[in-house]
Length: 363
Ligand SMILES: *Cc1c(COP(=O)(O)O)cnc(C)c1O
Image (cartoon, rainbow, N blue to C red; front, side):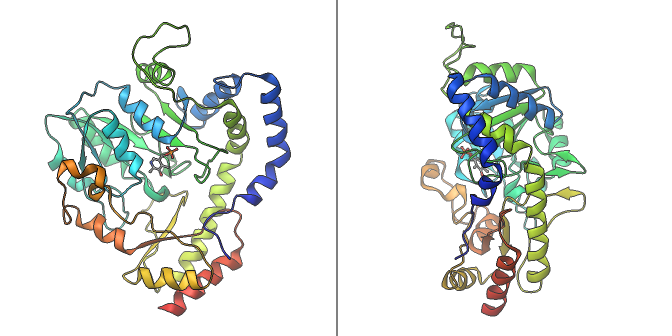
C-alpha cells in the first residue's frame, strides 16, 4: 500500500523536539497569541524578507482576513482562477465580492495572464492568484497589470511555501501572501493554522484586529471582526518545522525529478518555466487516460487523487452567478485529465519506481 501522504517519518524525525516544546507551552499556560506565535510571525516575515507576519486560524482565514482588511465592498469584483481549492473562492464570497474567473494556462495550470485584462472593469478591486500545486504564477506580468489598473494583489500561497521565481519567494510579490499550515501542506502543523505576510502596515494592523474580534486585545473594538487566531501549540510546532521545510521541499523536488525522468514519455509531467522553482506540493500528471491510470494504481494498492474534479465555477454554491459548462474550457479539460501522485518527502524511491511502472504498463 502506497498512501498519498504519510507524515510518520517526518514526525519521528522531530518527535523529541516537538514534545518538549509542546510541554513547555502546556506548562506556560499562554495558549492563545502567546510568545511562540509572536516569534513564529517574526521568523516567517524574516524568511520572506518582509516586515510583517500575522498568524491566523487557517489558510482560508488568511485569505479572508486579507480581503477584509482592504476597502472592498459588496458588489466589487475580484479576479481569480476557477482551477483551485474551493476556499479561494469562498474567501471572495465571504466579503460579499463577486468572483470573476479567468481561465488557466494549459501548460502551467495557473491563471492565464493573457486573459486577465479583458476581465477588468470599473468594479475590479483585486486579483487573487493561486500558485497551484506549488508552481508560481507569472507574477512579473500579473503585478504589472495590477499596477496599471491600481488593483490589489492577494497571493494564495497555501500550496507554494518556499516556491520562487528567480529566487524571489511567492507571497512577496503582491500586497499580501496567504499561507495555510493544514497538516498536508509543505509547511504543516498538527491541526489548523495559517498566516499572512505583508509589507503593508495598514493591512497588517487591520488583520491583527480582524483576527481577534476587531480588537487589539484591550476590549476596545474598532470593527466587527472574527475569531481566527493561530494557536500557541501550533506555533511551537511550526517554529520547529520551519527549520526543516527547505530540506523537505528539496526532497520533493528530487522525487519529482525521478517521476519526470520515468514518466515523461507516456504522460504530461508538470511544466516548470525557466527560472521558476516549484515546491511540488503536488506532483500532478495529465493524460486523456486519467481514469484508466487511476484505476490501475488503485488495483496495485497505490493512492492517487484528482485535484480538482470540478472547477470552482461549476460548484453548486456558485450557481447564483450563472456560470456554465464551457465557460472556462481549459480548466474544465484539466479537471478531466489531471492526477496527483504521492510525492511526500518520506516516501521511498522504490515506491516512485513502482508507481511509474504501473502507469507505463497500463498505457
Ligand atoms: C489548503 C488551501 C486553502 C485553505 O487552507 P485551510 O488552511 O485549509 O483553510 C486555500 N487555498 C488553497 C489553494 C489551498 O490549497
